[in-house]
Image 1 (tube, rainbow, N blue to C red):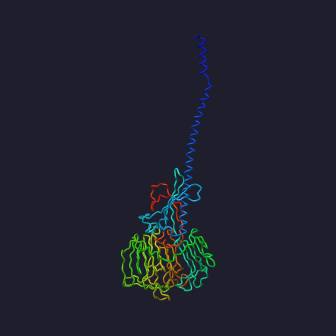
Image 2 (cartoon, one colour; image 1 turned 90 degrees about the vertical axis):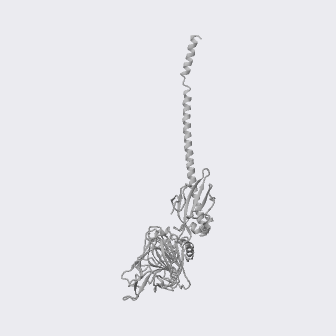
Image 3 (cartoon, rainbow, N blue to C red; image 1 turned 135 degrees about the vertical axis):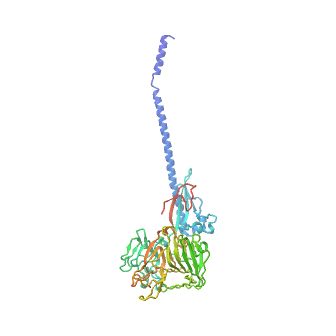
Length: 535
C-alpha cells in the first residue's frame, strides 16, 4: 500500500473516531434507564399504598361486621330476655352479614367466668356468664373482611339490664303506703285521694330520680332534684309534677313522660334471690341477726323463737364465698306491721326473734353482698363501706326496709321520747335499698321529740313501691330524721351480687371495648387487651 492510500485510510479512521452521531443514542439509553427506575419506584410505592388502603378499608369493614353481630345479638335479647341463658345461643360460627356490598362476616362467643367453659356452662349459666361484680353479660364479637390476607377486628360488648338501682330515688307510687292509709295505692296522675299526699319539702336529692307517678311539691317548698344536667329526673306521668313543680330547683334534666322504650320496670318478687342464695350463698329460716365485719365476714344468729337461737354453720360467714344471704318465713308469720306503733322482740341475749324471715343488720362490709328478706329488713346500726372500692351492698325486702327507731314514755312529749336502746343517732347507710311490696321507712317516724332533727344519710339508691316517710320535719315538735341522700355512682356499673336476676327491664349495651388484633393476648375479665371505646 502506497503512502497516499495509507493517508486516506488514516483520515477515514480519524473521521469515524471523531464523529458524534452515536452520542445521542447513549444519552437516550441513559434517560430511559433513569425513567424506568423512577416508574418502578412509583409502581412499588403505589402498590404499597394500595395494600395499605385495602387493609384500612378491610379493617373498617371488619369492625362494621363485628358491630353487625353485636346488634343482631342485642336484637335477639330484646325479643327474648332469656335468650342468653341456653349457653348455646352465646356462641356462633362464621355468619355472613346480610345485605353487605362486599363479602364480610362475623362470629361471637361469650367471656366465661373463671372456672367455666362451654362444657359446664349449661349446668349454671348465671355463674358461667354473668360477671358477679357488674351484673353484665360479656360477649366477644369478631368481624372479618378480605381474603388474602383476611382482616379481623374484635369488640367485647357488656350487656346490662337498666335497673331501678340506676337511680338515687325510684318509686312506683309517690303516695302513702296503704299500710298507713288504706285509701292509698293509686297514682297522683290518676287522681289519688288527697289524704295520701306525701309532699316534697326542702329536700336535696343528689342524684338521678325516676317515678312511675308524679312528684308533688309542697306549697312554698324549694326541693333540689339532681346534681347536674347529667342526672335524669324522670316520670312516666304526663308531667313531672302534679299541678306544677313550683319553686323546685331542677338541677337535673326533667323528662316526662318517659318513652315506653326507655321505661324502667319494677321487680315484684325476690323469690329468685332465695334460689340464688340456695345455690351460691346461705339461706336461713326465721328471724336472722347479722353483723357485718370489716374482715369480710358476717356474724349470724338465727332466732325463730326467743329460746331457739342458733348460730349457723359456717359462722362467721365468709362473704367472698357466700355473697348472698336470704331469710325465709316460717309458719306462723303474720307479716303485719304498723310503722307508727313499733316495738321490738328481743330476748335476754339481745337477739331479735320471730317466725318471719326478718333480717336485723348492721356493721361494716368490705366485699360485695346481697341480703334478701322474706319479710322485712331492719337496720339496727350504721351500714358502711369504702365508697371508692368495689364492695356494694343490696338490701332487698319482700315487704319493708326499716330504720330502727324506738320510742318510750317520757315527759313533755305526748308521743313519747326516743329510746336510746333502739334508736340510731344520725344513721349512715351505704347500700342499694329495694322494697318490693312496700316502703323504705323509719319506725315510729311520727313520734319522739327533737329540738333539731337528726340526719339520715343514704349513700346508694332507694327503690320502693310506695313512698315511705322518715320523719315529720314540718311539724312541731319534729320527729324522725331529716334526709341526706346521695347516689352512689358505682351502682351504674357495679350491681350487688345477683340483683340482675330480678330486674325485668330489657338488656342494653352498657359498654363496648375495641380489642387489639393480637391473637395471643389473653381475653379474660381481668386482662382483655382491649381499649375502652364505648359508654
